[in-house]
Length: 307
Image 1: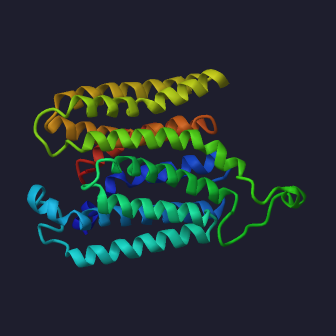
Image 2 (image 1 turned 90 degrees about the vertical axis):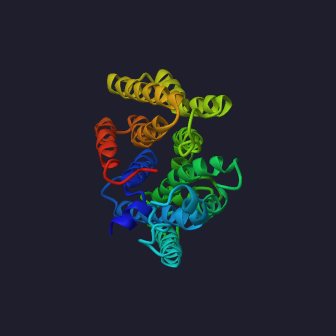
Image 3 (image 1 turned 60 degrees about the vertical axis):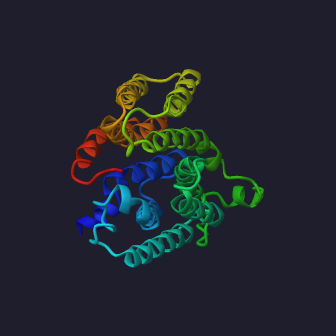
């Protein structure tokens, strides 16, 4: 079992759950809706399938640089990894669309996952695709709230539904966009930082500067939102926690070498704090729960590496 947990980078999986939860609640969904549980499972399959496919596509690179990985070490066969990743991606996409997500958004998400896994070592610009994967995950969950998938849920207000423009974008979809954009930028920043993890010394100055700018994007986006809406004390606390995390990770990134891996691990755990900032306008309790999860994820990374 452990080789598969390593392939799936299972310590990062809870960040997918907080992504879906934040998007679902921001879009107006409720946790008691049975589709929410299915969306969590679908997102888990998409994430896990994507992570396994990542290793399956990187066998040649890992054989030279990371021989301890499950496939180069012989603990998992490449053919089995390819098969499992494809089944998980297809299963997750089908489940998400069946239980309400927009099939087009879900299809684009799967395409982005596959494209990144196959070309991220060949094209430097693929870091943007990695950010798009998390952005699209947000939008997939948000689209499910309105029941735009293959199973059409009955509208709460039939009269309003009849008068609505069928071509209009669901309001919940739109309201989720700022949070999705902030998360996408943050993940691009992490991916840029992770690119130099296997290298010795410091990362190029330009790459590091761009990564830092993107990592701070969620703080800027939500600081502006809190300022315009009148943020409460808990939101300010979460924003401060985010700033401290980025500041500390930044110091690690500047050291380079092994410290880069530590910084990337911290930043990956910090995804739940970005989700906390996003969901704090809907539920402070959920937001604080996300913040409390960050150190737990960091601890889990000692058991199964996050990168």
